[in-house]
Image (cartoon, rainbow, N blue to C red):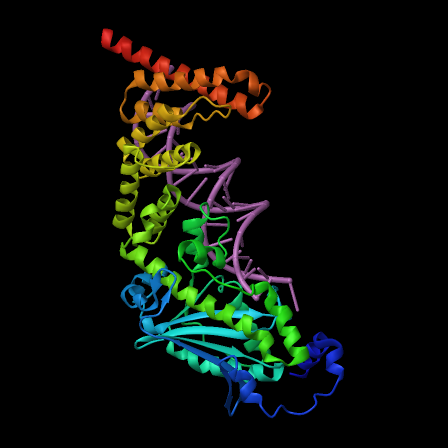
Length: 428
DNA sequence: AATTCCTGGCTCGCGAGTAG
DNA sequence: CTACTCGCGAGCCAGGAATT
């Protein structure tokens, strides 16, 4: 414990040299201005800020209480999990003194959120100095028993390991072996990897949950502000950090609602305008999560859009989504759909510098092996060859290119020999 | 002072189908 | 019947992203 004190003392710098004048007489008042209070137990004290969101609270597009209807759908995040109960989910986010996962990184604020009866409660535990960490950890340790799942954003590899470290350093044990982790970063990436500039929680909540923060203090400011607080002991410095952390927790709940709804097969009204790339990723994700028929319905809807032409995206995006969808249907052995998409790609693709032959080759393979139509197979192989030939000058000496070329010529040769044989057989 | 998950690119080997 | 080729899935490896 004294080691910690020293370390923080060093961080505190010159201000630490001055003796703390006198215990502030209005200690509870100064925290009251942030809506917080000092929580005291036999284990010690720390600062607690509790915020209760009533039944009708809304965060962006979603009513917080809506998770009641969809929480059970989150079960499929883990195959060995029993049904997820709303009130057994613990939303979790920390503010720390840095980004490292080593022991030097201290979570000075632990934000948690949970559902009870008709409301959603956010509790923020804050330590005014290293000595308070013990009491905070004990509080959390006891509270955590009520829950089966931790819900976080990248908490699996960041917040949680850091927190566990603190338990070890405080000679405490956290009984977390039975806890399952719902890290919403990963499904977020599954859906928005290509449709958002980044999958940071702030980007996701703004563009997909409809929640906009005003005057947000970014997480990267948290360490600086905490050190400033340690130096000046003025709680007002931390207001922005409390608010930021609180929003992170509530956003986690909203995000859980978003995924819960998707898994339930519920497309919210505002998702009507969703881009094909995101629709495709959503379909793949539903499939990965074991919602096979839902995924199929979802992607078949996209297929309709693509083939009806009732879609409004850039040419480049249209082309790429055609190929992605074709590959999906090919893997599912739904060849007719795949073929339709490859053909559409060819029809729609203007002659460009970049030559892509995959769809031609796919069609050649399909006609050779599935339809046994050698004429068509040769037709598409030769189309590819012609395309390649036209661009040949641009790719002279490109090793990869000549490899493709040789493979293509070999294919054509083989197909023609094969057809020759068939001819002879039919003649005889 | 890290970790986890995911993806793209690569190789390897297997099964099916075909050539000899 | 044997041997080859094709297509594809599995496995491996490297690199990227998110967290304060």
